[in-house]
Length: 419
Ligand code: NDP
Image 1 (cartoon, rainbow, N blue to C red):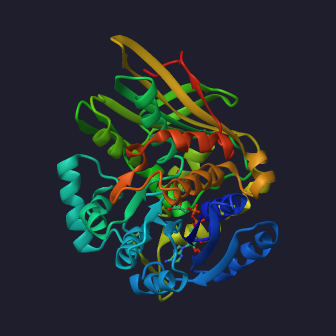
Image 2: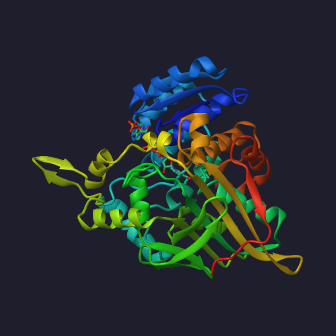
Image 3: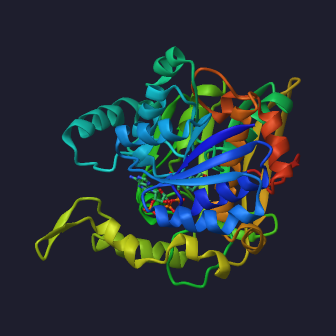
């Protein structure tokens, strides 16, 4: 059916590439373009003999629009799937615009250098106007709406699990279960154990920045910001058990607040064990989470990037992680004049994922929806010039593919609600 250029070859990309290779009728050809091309070559070597999908590789500097354009022109894809880091989103979108090729990603834009005065001025204005202080937000990518429309290309933003599947769950609840959704609680539980005292399940820099930032939620038409980790709840997760979870800021709150009419409150909770939080607090207190470069022996280093080098590579956690993830959304609202609540969630087993694609469940739960979002685009089911988050498309074909491709979901029509 089509040719896809996949940018990046880390934890998430590796799963998405495995899944593309399992669906060769849709993904006839893929090119894996990344900074360290030896990783792409090694993956190609592993997969090529087992799949009908034709795999090629390329070296690309995804911070450089001209270099991305060069790779796009050489490969001539039907779509570009960005699985590098949020820092590269805008450069890749610019290259897609120049080449008039559709764009897909799993995380919204984040500035790499948060001390850049030009970026900082825009950021501070946004903090004041919108009321949340996360370094990432959709404004940068939503600003491409008209340019993508004019170019006649589709941009699908945030097709991982959260954001991604959680947003599709919301569109599905809206379509089939509610006349009006009033509250959404997104619950992200990782009940996995990798046996290390401290490690992050995906890119440590992105993960630690997200978790150490102030939390925020949407209520009655505006943001409420709270100190990091200051709202805690307990929840009994199916197939995982009782866990502590904490309210975080999360990017899909922003798009759901914009796109779900009548919604009164949206919150996001993630589970953390006490040991993880203690390690993180300590690293934060000594300055290791800082993104500001420091001079060390005549060399500039960024503390959080140095920390990334010390921590286990998330890709290496696969074989040693046991347990399950449980991620989903609890909705309350009105149907036919009556109050209703439902909980849609997926449970994913780390070891099962490893057996299938040699990755743990965090990369799996992101890489599978990244493949499905791209499939929706290639099949023409999600095709609309402009840039859209996944809650803005028909959820049904995506939900069917989740069941088929390893992320089955359930609907609980009598869930325990969170106060
Ligand atoms: P990794 O760090 O494992 O992989 C990132 C990849 O991008 C690496 O292959 C890296 O190359 C490559 N890369 C980084 N910078 C450049 C560059 N300038 N040019 C070319 N290639 C580059 O990250 P993950 O796989 O864990 O995460 C990938 C994306 O998925 C991130 O955007 C993350 O935020 C998102 N994500 C989304 C989730 C969701 O549910 N929506 C959940 C988890 C992650 P190299 O090998 O040289 O470092």
